[in-house]
Length: 335
Image (cartoon, rainbow, N blue to C red):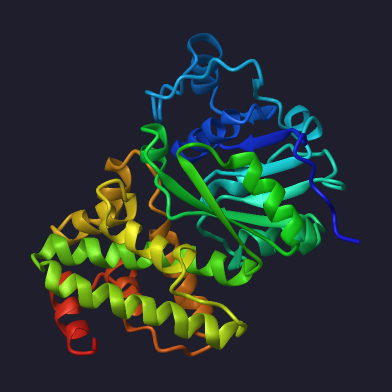
């Protein structure tokens, strides 16, 4: 029998970045009991003493009696039934350091859009393999949704992905509000990889903007990116899915076009001639697409899917190829 989530099940959020902060805000809208594990001492102090995250989304105020911020991961995890992972993928292992509380009878949700290295697996795959959590106790929450617009309470959409549709329904009820609409899916594999890939394509769009390409080119670039996502998913895990749905195509579009997209911003700076390390230092937030580009390149070496855009981004970021020349070459392969 599948694990069943109750609407009253307390939640734990692990992470203190912009998306983690937005998710805490979302969960508190419905008076969910939230235990927020914050590893950064300064951020923890600002939330406890002043009711806001001093580093990210400072405009979000936390006054709810249902919120318990803590730097004790075992206290946070043991106190909750639903565990939401919301740290950047590159730092997930570090975020989970010191966790000794068993994850038996816990439902784990990934809100992370990245690959775990050096294993080259998604977050759900990593938790399944390293913490022995079966997939019927694993889920994904994805957009299209930017944390900054959640902070502003602009109408946004989230997709809840679980193997069990009843769990997806309960989780949807826990996060739905006047400004959050929800839908559900059972395609954990497809949606996780789609959210990883779209960050790479947002970097590609940013690079194109940085070197001087306009909307006409980027429209073609993004439509080809959507086809690449579909090809990759169909080759690696074929199933009945609609990649035109918002969890796939909508998330791709918002990440490629939005001014809030850190991956697009990363790409724009690369296109303008900044070195990769300089961009990483200057940006205050992690651009998941940078790490994903390397991971997907190596994953796809086993599958051989035709992915010229993803390959182009990899060549620019990891092989030092000239961005303008690489995009010129790519432009001849797009349809």
